Amino acid sequence: MSGPLVLGIESSCDETGIGIVRGHELIANEVASSVEEHVRFGGVVPEVASRAHLQALVPTLRRACEKADVDLSEVDAIAVTAGPGLMGALVVGVAAAKALAVALDKPLYGLNHLVGHVAVDLLDHGPLPQPCAALLVSGGHTSLLAVNDITRDIVELGATIDDAAGEAYDKVARLLGLPYPGGPVIDRAAAEGDPNAIAFPRGLTASKDLTRHRFDYSFSGLKTAVSRWVETRRRDGGDVPVADVAASFQEAVCDVLTAKAVDACEYLGTDHILLGGGVAANSRLRALLEERTAAAGITLRRPRPALCTDNGAMIAVLGSEVVSAGLPPSSLEIGANSGLPVSTVLV
Ligand code: KG4
Ligand code: ZN
Image (cartoon, rainbow, N blue to C red; front, side):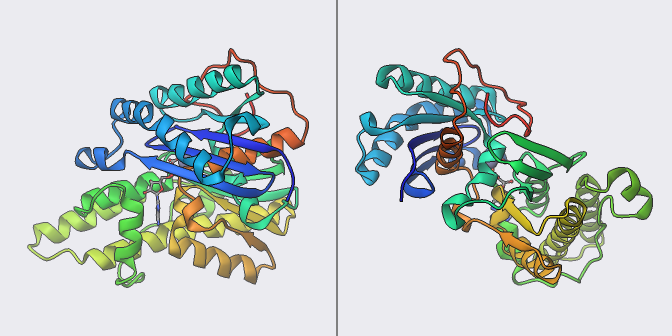
C-alpha cells in the first residue's frame, strides 16, 4: 500500500475520533464517545460534548499513534473536520489540528464531515468509480449527491426538507420510551417486529410531490403519524407493540430512502452508488438498498457498519484523497463552519 500518511481529527458532535491512514489503508481508528453523558437528556448537549472533546482529544490521539506505531513527526498532513456540526465541538478539533500543524510544520486540511462519511468507503473498497451517486444519511443530514470528484465536485440533487433520517429515528425512539441514540435501538427492536403491521406514510412520494421534490425527503409527517398512532393506542388503554411500530416505521424510512436513491442513479446515468452516514449502519437500509440496486443493475458500495458512525478515519482518508489530488492546504486562519454545505469539500 502507498499514499500519504494522514492524521484525521473529528469532533463535530459527540465522538472524538482520531484516524490514521496511508492512502486507502486504515492504520488506526480510535474513538472516544461522550454518548453516555447525553443519554439522560435524550440528545446531545453541546456544552457537554465540547468539554468531553477537550478531555478526550490528547489521550485518543496518543492511543491512535500507539496502535498505528506512528510518530507524529512521520505524518504527511493533518486533516480535520471544519464543519458542519456543533460549533463548540468543532472548534476543539480545529484548534488541536492547527496546533499540531504549526508544531510539526505539516500542511493542514479543513474538511467537510459529510463528505468524510461518503469517502470512508474508500478504506473498505478502494478507488471510486467517478462520477457516481451517493446516499448520505446521518443524524443531521439526509441527501442524495452526485459525486463527480470526491475532492472538489459534489452536487446535492436533493435533501430532507425537515428532519434528517437519523433525527427521525432518535425522535421515534424517544416517543416509544427507548434510549438515545434511537437508531441502533430501533434497528434491534424492529428485528422482532412485522414491517407490514402498520401502514405509515412515505413522505414526498405522491406524484404531485415528485415533480417538485423528486430527490428530496421528508420525515416529519412520518414521525407525527407514529406519534398519533402510539397516542391513540395508549388512550384506548392498549399496549404499544414496540417491535411492530419500530419495524413499520423503519420500513417506511428505508422504502423512501432506497426508492429515491435508485431513481437518482437512473437520473444521473450512473451504475455505482455510495452509502454513508450513521444511519448507513442500519441493517434494513443496507439490505433493502442492496436488493433494489442489484435489481436495477447498480453496484452498491457500503462501508462496514463500524465505519458508518462518526470517526477520524473518514476524515483522514478524505484528507489522503485531497493530498493525492494535489489540492492546496487550508490557511492556518480557517474557522469552523457549523453550516458548511456538502458541496464545499475543503475549506
Ligand atoms: O453520522 P452520525 O454518526 O452523526 C452525525 O453526523 O449526525 O449519525 C448519527 C445518527 C443518529 O441519529 C443515530 O440514531 C443514527 O445515526 N444511527 C442509526 C443506526 N446507528 C446509528 N440509525 C439507524 N440504524 C442504525 N443502526
Ligand atoms: Zn456524522
